[in-house]
Amino acid sequence: MLKERYTIDNQKEIVVFVLGMRVHKLLQIHRWLPIMTSMSVMLRELYTNKQLGFLHGEFLFSWRGITLLQYWESYDHLEAYAYNDNHMHIWKYFNQNVAKRKAVGIFHETYLVEAQKYEAIYNHMPRFGLAHAMPLKQVDRDINKSRERLR
Image (cartoon, rainbow, N blue to C red; front, side):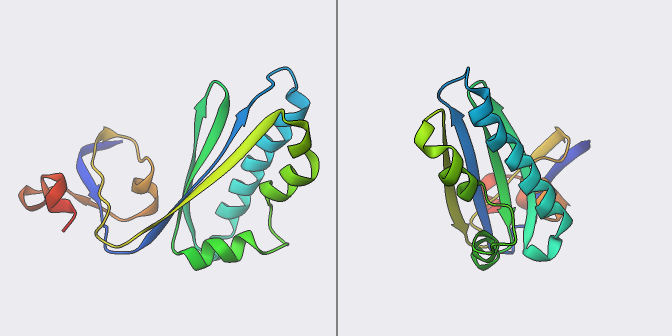
């Protein structure tokens, strides 16, 4: 638990990758459960192979789906992982086994974020999101406001 006010060190470029699924046909669990399971397998693979450039990932749940929020060192790392056939790929599984059945949809979004163009604040929070991926520093008078942390 972070009991004081902390922020992240935003001196490095990062990539934010959002991967998710939305269930369209709730009763067809046999169609969407494998996708959900494959997201867990992929995350386990990424944590096991830190040299891939993966920094951190977290699941966010809604009543109709799941989103996996990921942080990467660079777009080159993310792209190398995505196009390597030796790694777990949700897209490949989805396109081969699920897409035509329309029980579930998947999406991804990629954000390339320059150094000093992102900021965060944590107060009485467990580590979450960027707090897992980036070094932390205690907030002081010089970086008390959001605009100050973006410099």
